[in-house]
Amino acid sequence: MCRETDENSKLVILSNIFDSVVLKDIVMRNKVASPLALEKVLEYVVANTSVTISGNKIAASLSDSGQSVSAPMVYDYLRFIADACVCDKVPRYDIRGKKALAFEEKTYVCDLGFFHLKKNRVKDEYNYMMETLCYNELVSRGYQVYVGKTYKGEIDFIATRGDEKIYVQAAYLLADETVAEREFGAYRVIQDNYPKYVISMDKIVSSREGIIHMNVIDFCLNGAH
Image (cartoon, rainbow, N blue to C red; front, side):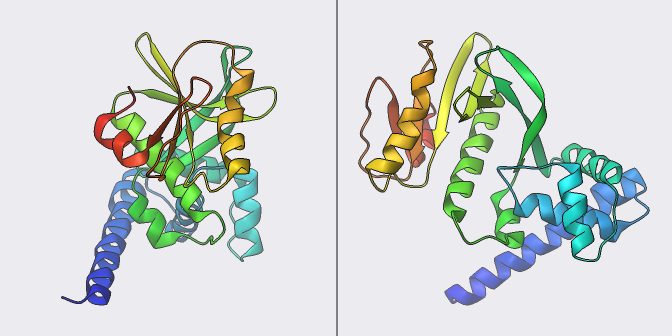
């Protein structure tokens, strides 16, 4: 089978699974009155994995494209989507105040195949994919995962499991010193001694300042260590 045919077959299978999830797991279970509106919300959320979203923003975006849906309805649909295990809503955690925040949640698609099917972005696509991959790997290992908020910015993930806690920054490649400084430098405002990781596709890793740099394949095979 040629590569093009194989790729087309994968897309057909993914599309059928996606449609099945929408029709059976969400529409029928929740008696959704407007399947088209739900599908548009779902496509928006899947295509914008690892991005902060809000019901108002999604409603406005869909209204601009001719699909009328209210913000409360969007929030209902987001709950249905999360219940169907298509996407997870991930809360932010204020590292300085040591508390979870009830706003500015991020969403992560639970299967990157769906992102590939519905993606609508070209810029920084691989960074979004890396972040989503690391999120799903952490969840699969039993971690409770948060997006970390600092007074200067953001840490991709705080992951806790019992008494264990780790921090994770995800990047496609540390292509130059500016990118490396952005990823490693994000940790300078954190004063505790819990393990801190930078995960990337780089084949040659270079840990610094006590922060562990890992190749993403090693991270997925062996976990944080």
